[in-house]
Length: 179
Image 1 (tube, rainbow, N blue to C red):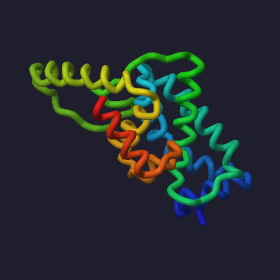
Image 2: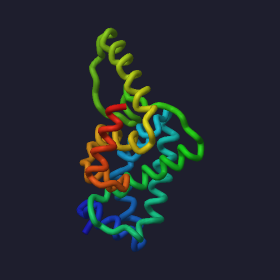
Image 3: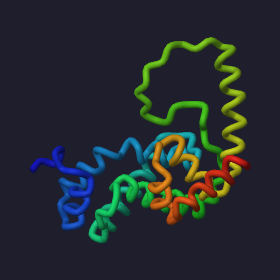
Image 4: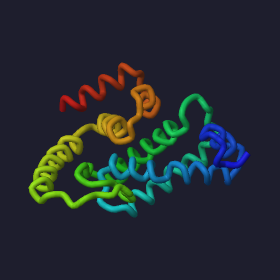
């Protein structure tokens, strides 16, 4: 069976057994989403740093793939690895930036028409308020907001990433939105 026909779970199990081609397929499938997650979670201003951290995420995932157990969606496991990498990055560099919510993340392939300048000004002002609010959230709340609203993970999946129950995720998101 070719790598394009295999599920993420099957590919990660094969990667855990040393199949580099299977892991390359995982990277190909999820690289863009992991870069976007890292970019948004850390509020990065350049693509290179997000790419470097995504490479670290996949390196960690490769090293940990032998312990992967297919209990859910493989992408949730990857987001957990990415969340841990982001937390380590923030701890190491003591990063205190805000998340850019007003623009598309790197590699955006959405076509756009030219917006009216007044619309841009209003959107920029609103985005600055959102950036400031989300940028001031504690790490776990920020992760929950990014995973829910930008990566559209379900509460149970966010719980798997952050090590919480569904009520814990609900509470975390409620507190984040309240702040």
